[in-house]
Amino acid sequence: TSIAWHPIYESVFASGGMDGTLLYWNVGPKGSEDGPAARVPFAHDMAIWDMKWHPAGHMLATGSNDRQTKFWARNRPGAAVADDDDDDEEASEIHQDEMELGNHVGIVIGKRGATIISMQRATGTKMYVDQVRRVLHIEGTLKQISAVKKRVGALLERVQSDSEQRQQQA
Image (cartoon, rainbow, N blue to C red; front, top):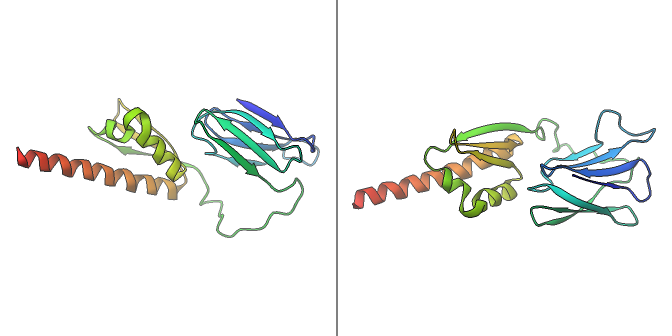
């Protein structure tokens, strides 16, 4: 939904998508032909509407429908990137999973979406609730999906326990 050309390197630009993904592109002769040079899958919770580079080109600001402004820094094009053993390609691969919610769809969504939005921000995942099937759809790394399932599972257990206590008191 937005694009910003780098102020110094004519072949470099950034683009922001409706899903909150931020992409860095290098389309020049030394650029990547297979797609974006870098991808930030969950840069924002919602659509990125505007972006602007710092005049020196070392930083990018993005604005989104999630009412956040974020600042991003990258290595200069052509600069060596440090090898990070923890940043394994498998660990950063995006997966999709679902979790059954039963009759507790409203609790996971929360008032005006507050619960699911805060959980997305805390875990770095994308989520939505399919109210017809009564499932939570989760998109993220395996580690992120595991964290979401643990949090939602604890929330559902707490709700179930409270419900059982009320039934026993009645």
